[in-house]
Length: 210
Image 1 (cartoon, rainbow, N blue to C red):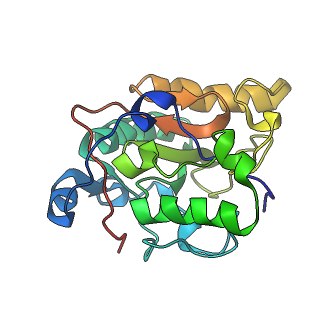
Image 2: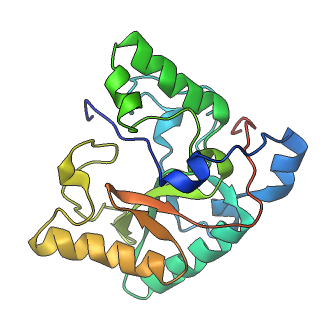
Image 3: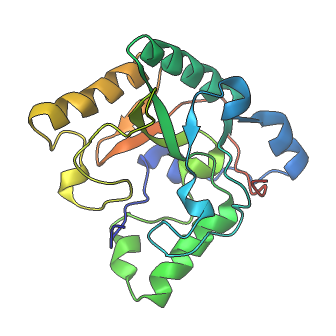
């Protein structure tokens, strides 16, 4: 596991105050990715102790990846494109409840790492709360083995910057970037695994993942 983290997305939505909506609204807008394409592998790290805090985060009660319906539809096409090459997607995080983001902030206080907040690596509000951000990688569809990307997920160092790779690692990151961007996703340049999808009138959710 990595000893540091990232956790900040591109600024625009993070700096905009959008409302947190009721669970019934969340249920009408969020879609379980695997109900659309069961070949997408889901490994929700924050529902386990296999993450930078060493414990499951509040709000993650199941290994399920939810996103806004628009993003799920685009992700389905990405998976179809990859399947032609014998590859597929593995998701580490998708929609993240507000309470989980707040727990990340509390963690930085407990371990006395205010610099992670100040430098924008962890935030109480993120695009993940809006159901429009997804953290993922490529896998061999037959074996489910991850394609090597050079750093693990949640690795905070310049080595995780999308462009900071050479040789086959650079090709692997670019392959993921190309297939995601073709369907409208945008990469966060400091995290090779992080992609966002724009939707109209985004809202924030705190629905527990069950």
